[in-house]
Length: 230
Image (cartoon, rainbow, N blue to C red; front, side, top):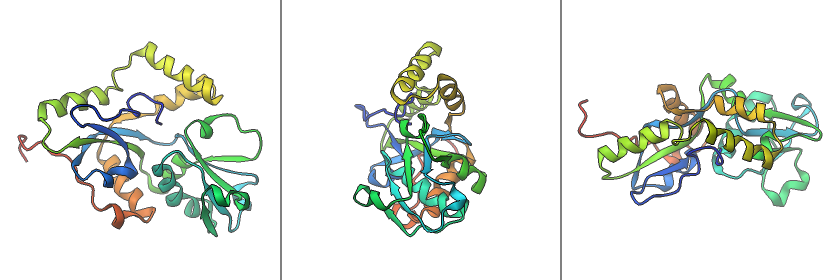
């Protein structure tokens, strides 16, 4: 979702970052805002593709061909349990020739598929867990002024300040690059939420646990405004 409003925000002068959920461990000087991020429920931009139907796969090698690490975590958390097979290997490009399954994201996951089968892993995650998938989070620098935090959070939770015409321009740009239809992109973007709720925060921890990286990443350090009462 790097091409959607707000998702590609880079570090500004105040040190705020919108980051992939899988990258929060690399930001020890930031806390994660509990109410702002990018969450989707049953339609997303991470997919599993194969030449045969998933129920015909037994022990496939899976090529991780994603643009970021969070899509890989989603794949590791869903494919075996949801599709009922046990991967014999997870490979990168060097092992792609032997892979029967490829995990893709962003434009590749929503553009036209010339042959084979494609499954939306965001939907698989929701079926397995009953939880939304949270792809990005707002990282707040330690010591940030609470007023500034509130302003940044409000701006992002409203979709990065884009109006209707700007959102249409974003859809047209993605459609031109990916080949996806404008209707499909409209449906996809309609399902995006920028305001996180309790289930979204639960989903972040669940993703780390199911993908086997919970100990590596550690507990999420959620931001709290010290000026607010308990």
